[in-house]
Length: 181
Image (cartoon, rainbow, N blue to C red; front, side):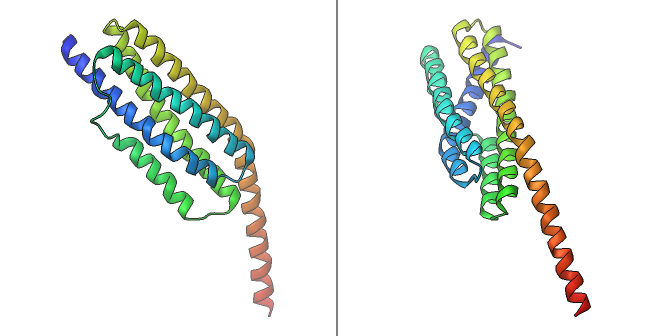
């Protein structure tokens, strides 16, 4: 691949990530507000601050490149956020909501991990050493967030599973009583 073509792809992928992170800055407060688990609310709030830092790093990279970060809408992130919003609007039980929010957040993290992995490789090939450092720092933070979400899921998903079992048990008892009547 020619360097100028790789550089064009690099800049376009950076714009995509900038759009993704900017969309996430708007979505994370809604996710925090919807979460019922205090730990999950705190996690979303902390990640919001981290995400603002990701936007700043990307702006720093664009400034060094002499390019604008604007001009591209990340449709992948738009879709992921839409799915999360639809899940919130369905108003599931609190345990199910939190489990669903974790699932939606992990999809976002995996999307970002893939994106930052690619652009950091492009930056390395293009000799953009300062950008490589910034992009890898963000990549590591995205991986850490994913790990934290996995840890939260271990307890929250169990709560969701138990609440479903309890609900099914109650429905079963109600149905048995109704059949006897």
